[in-house]
Length: 451
Image 1 (cartoon, rainbow, N blue to C red):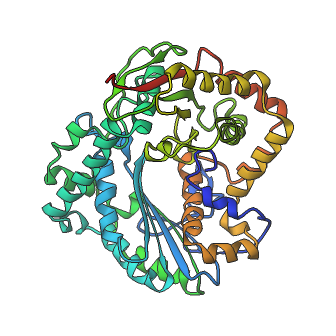
Image 2: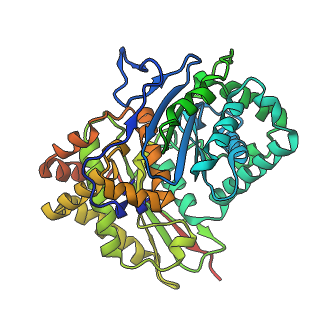
């Protein structure tokens, strides 16, 4: 979403209005709390929830799959196991001219593939095999070790090398140690102990059609029949229950004061300001959503051009992606080489205070709301001009195709855009005063080691 800019490219689709993308009747509607699923997912006989959007003229197709059992289901001694599963599954769908995303978030493993349209039937066959009863044993030991080692390398970078992930984890833990005690990417020491047998058993608990939800976007009148034939043929099978691990209780550290450890690889101070974010349904969520888009734009303007080091450090001016269900937003800054940390801290505190005390202006809020409404517009509502843009930019299609699963997983209503449009300026300003209060924001810095 716009605030962290994982969907940055979607701003190219600035003139969204209405349009068409055919929803195919694939089976009985999925029930949500006793009512018909407003997002149009249909339930196949094997339990898989499927949505197919047909948009003629697309040279690429996009398939997104979620599997129940994300990072929240990792055993206490295996933080990162779900990410290993995502990595192993990504290997099965990888190939030339493909955009592949694989990650473990909260209660689900996410797998996304965008590829040339003629390759979609082969991909559907691969996904069907991935959900079939023989899938777990089809992963040989070498493949599982490779997936584990790649996940381990990334987790080690996030824990010991990259300032951005290191700072965000540390800052969130200061505000609520329970929230970040088990990072989704995993604990390197625990990942290193995972055996192929344990990884395979975890795959067996997740790779079943009744544990899956799928969105397919592409062209062709036969798209729905193709998807239903391939995925509906997978046999339902018994799977063990997914366990959950309750986070350890711990008292949060006080916000406000900055923690300042050192790092041997740095030449300048890096700092983040961590802001607890509400979850959907909690008071202030929609105004906060708009407020963080204001913060993203203002941070880029106030803090100035990124200095290069921020990109390598994975430290953008604002990091928050509500489509991932993240519970903290982070305002971030890298100092100049040789800067005193006090200068960087003053910049961040001034930015936070300006958003909180001065409040966003009406034009800022209107601009932020427009950007969010555009990015949250479902594929089925896109006009022909935007559809042509998707046709020329597979990365845009990849991001758009994921949105229905985001709505489904996070519990967003189909009319989220209408609800956002009803938020008032006063509500946005009040939300920023509430969530950016001095006693709620925590600061953490990484400093160069003295030489």
